[in-house]
Length: 228
Image (tube, rainbow, N blue to C red; front, side, top):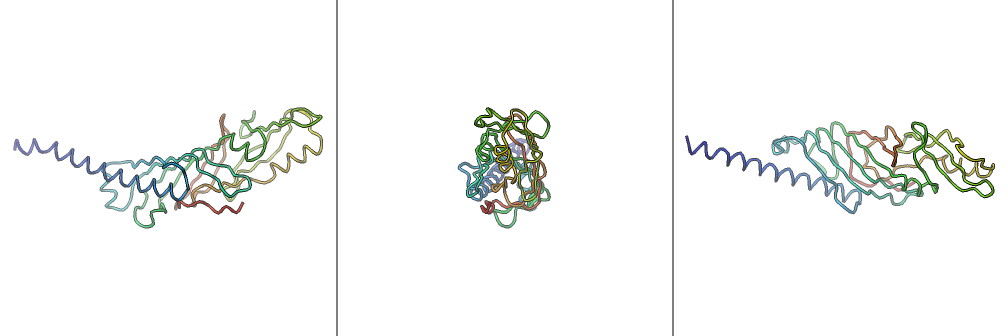
């Protein structure tokens, strides 16, 4: 009895270590699939929740997986808008099948888009607007001085960020400048660097950038078509 009691902590520790090794291996495979598929310079952080993970792997379903990737490029787009940070939560993730494809009962994700990158994409200096759901853009107009405009930001079909309700917040832009601004904001910017299967639901301006919220079910770690 004493021998059995002494062996129990060793058995528990061994089981824990084996489970952690299995978890780290599964997390590494998911991270590699994301990095290869999305062409990022670094692997994302991946965390499988719950214990034991070995049981989840045996059953073929991971109850919840958190993935956080950084600096996802947007190559091949006429107005590239990289993703500074992408946080993905996958519920009931199936472990069988293609390693590049994440089949989950539900997927919830948030992409952070910095104002610096948004400014580069639009060719204007963009910042958070004074009203809710709005951003501001400033530019210098010959003979008119500095002009600041405000526009509402929203989610559009096809995982696009749309700009509507353009207003002049400061200055008096001449007609040609006003027309140029309207052309800049007329077309939504497609997000071509989001894992396939995620669908944009909302876009919220914050002090440092845009928070884009996505949901989905089957997510594929492959770059989207660079056709925009």
